[in-house]
Length: 116
Image 1 (cartoon, rainbow, N blue to C red):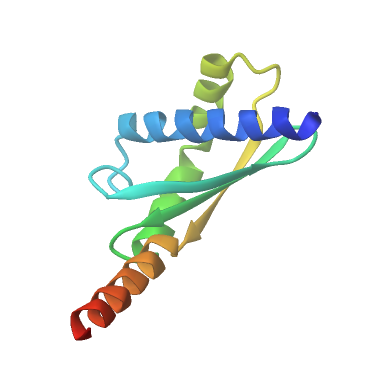
Image 2 (image 1 turned 90 degrees about the vertical axis):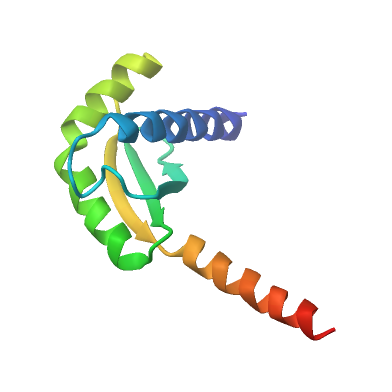
């Protein structure tokens, strides 16, 4: 039963981080095509890993993660107030290249279907 609670909190945090990212004014984040791929929360809800991916590649995701790390205090405060959490989890932002890999797979499938 506890797994459902953690999964729900993870999805709520993911949704809120996406909306908070739209409000940030850091040039490393603003105007970039970023996606929150996944959020994993520890069992005691004190730590959360946020996986960030960018359409333009892993390097852009790395710079965006640096910008998000610098805005971590603001994001934690907004998460705590928006989700009414007793304690907002400590966030760590991890660059992810899953969108880039997905585009590569799509291109390979498209080329294979064109050959047939």
